[in-house]
Length: 267
Length: 129
Image (cartoon, rainbow over all chains, first blue to last red; front, side, top):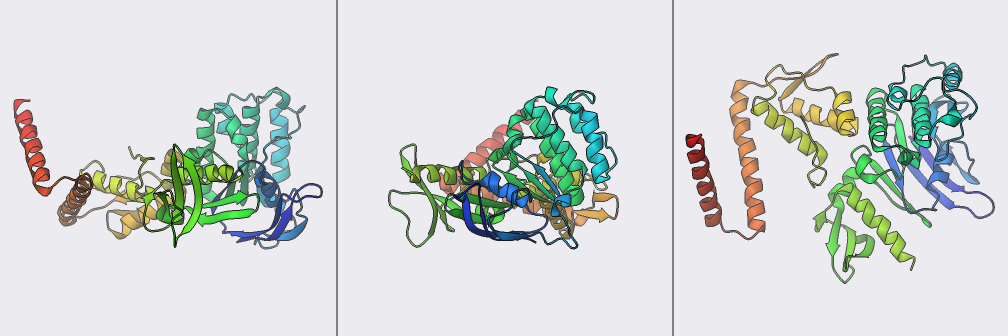
């Protein structure tokens, strides 16, 4: 189990998130989502062990780990790979560093990435695909993916997700994704963490949400149930409640409702 | 070809399980048929591999398929079981039809009438073809 204990993180004086704690089971596929600016990418950097938290600690639960980063594959939201290098040189460097034999990397072929082109000549989407291929080739125990896959065209994104699922089936890594398109990944994830400015609003398995998160349309707030979100949409007041009654929703709808209500609350 | 109905409130593993059962009972997946591997099916449908594993495990306990170590899952269904399973699946379909129709406010008489009309039309169509 990966345990995050009382993490406070951010840049400069004001923390982005304060004192948050949660656990991730090894082999879980988690989506961290929530409105812009609440620190999802920051939290991912903390998980990647690239940004140290101001306070709090992470226990990855891997035995004999000097540097956890050797087991982590992180795809950041902005890609900082050596621009002047050629694709093949960087691939070789990466492979030498991780001791993993060169793979034909079918994703690269599909993305028409030339082995001899310079990194600086690749498009944003091609860079993201290249970076993902490198990460997956190193057998990470923890795969962290930020929103960057949105820059990849639908066909390649589909292929990237297929490759990710194959890796999941083969090696059962823990995967944490930030805010990917709900419809595309809703059947891949088994846990959702919804982050707001004031901390974690929701941390549940998708199974639990599909079973218990129900939509109730009513002017008054429903009583005696846990209300997760309320939003006014198309002239009706929608409440997302934890209940055995009400309309069952698919995951992407549940998350869209949560997202909408966080924005309406601000007003 | 197995498919997921994204708009459905039926859990993905239920959807898959039912489709595979229907496929087996209808003869689309005959006895001895090799089921797609977990890896293959998961990546094709972009589903968590554990979900597929769960479906296969349940189908194994319910004796629809059997696993051969190292080579995957194969359809394995006894003749005697086939008949009873077909009946169960038909009953499930009927339940679904009835509950949806009642939700729309139809009476049992209306359902029976519509069903028999439809069946009559179908059998006369089949004859003319």
